[in-house]
Image (cartoon, rainbow, N blue to C red; front, side):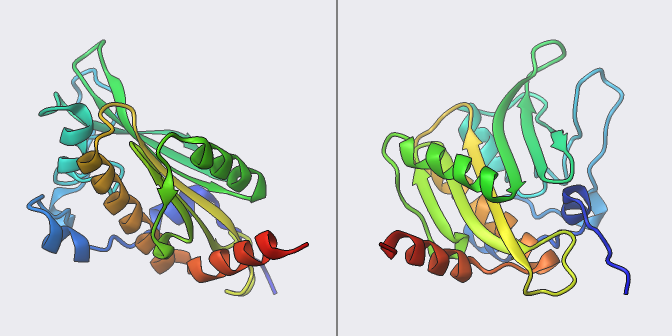
Length: 214
């Protein structure tokens, strides 16, 4: 039997966008097939996004809050895209002055999980996050979810490995901005679960077992 190997880019391409929170919790326009991401020929890096949404899951409101005001020409730019890492930056600013304001990443493997956890736990003002993100942490401007999802080269759905979902604001880090970052990470987790199958409960259970072991 042949094993089909999926890379992180393939997983991201197959993510099914969940709109449940988008329509009920914010006035942001909902991304749709009639507003696909495009790359204008204006000398700026990145894509315009999908109906104002950046990196598939970052709402226009999140971008505006992180930017501290209405952003100039927001764009999505995938900065890492390989077998175990996918990172997307939301850029704002004009030609020659673009800067990242939000960064969303998915990282596979135990080493990435350990690094993401160490950073999350060391952040100022960190608190436990929601269980639907797995072992999760929320601090001003940084939300981290450590979950378990089907491995890219898995032959069964039970073959799961650590997936680290991290979103951060490189601009404003107030409570409202952080709340919208958490919403974006929740939608990312929903899409990933719909695409490959994830078990945040498994991540929480394994973490509880590890911390209680002698």
